[in-house]
Length: 141
Image (cartoon, rainbow, N blue to C red; front, side, top):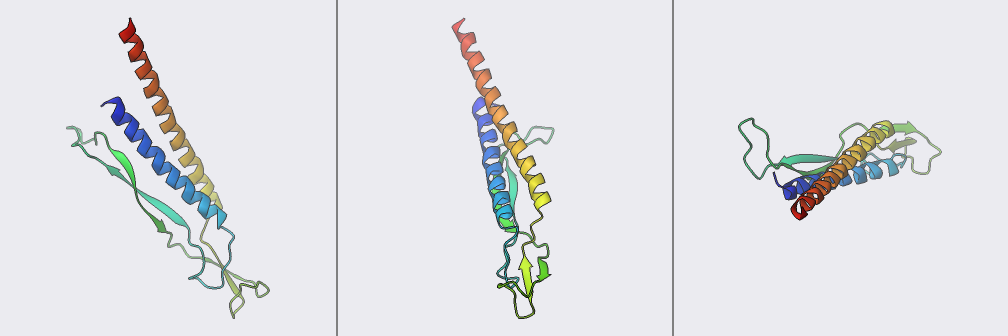
C-alpha cells in the first residue's frame, strides 16, 4: 500500500469523524428545545458510514485500500420525550410539550469516541509523514 493510499484512507476517516462530531454538536445544541407537536420537534440525527473498497481484497478477505464514506445522516426513530407543562407558551391544547429524543450521555460518549478516532487518523498521517522524511534522508546518504 502506498503512502498516498494511507493518507487517503486517514483523510476519509477524518472527514467522516468530522461529520459525526458536527451531528453530535447539533444534537446537543437542540437537546432542550421544546415544541408543541411531535412533527415540529427536533429529532436526533446519526450519520451512516460505509467502507468503500475500490480494489479487490487479498485472499484473506480484507478490503485493501478501503475508505470511509458518509452515506447519509438519518433521524432517530426513538420516541420523543413528552412533558406536561401547561404554563409553557409552546404547550399544545392538552398542556403537553415535546422534547427531542437526544440522550446527552450517549452523545457525549459518541463525541469522545469520534474525537479519539479523529486523533488516531491524525497520528497515522503524522507517522506517514515521518516515514516519508526518513526515506528522503536515506536517499541523501
